[in-house]
Image (cartoon, rainbow, N blue to C red; front, side, top):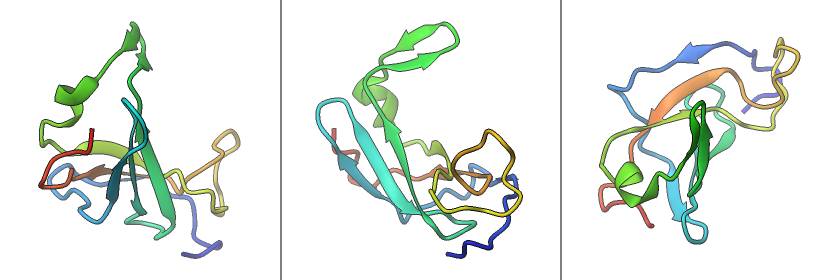
Length: 108
């Protein structure tokens, strides 16, 4: 982790998901994955909740949407300041990546 790490948009492929995140249930319908960003090495968190809003309205993902064994999309949301981060972007280093759910399933 380095406060001097530059902000850079990096999109990692779904074919190499990150397997080191800790997955936890944080109350009914809330799942949190926390771990080290593969680019900047800062700790970041990705949260899924019962109701997520998309362009056409609310969606309730529920267990089948999260517990299908497929990698889940995440973006770095670390609080570390990164050089050249664009105005309006408050968190992260610019990296997006995929998270491999735990082999035993998600704790929902």
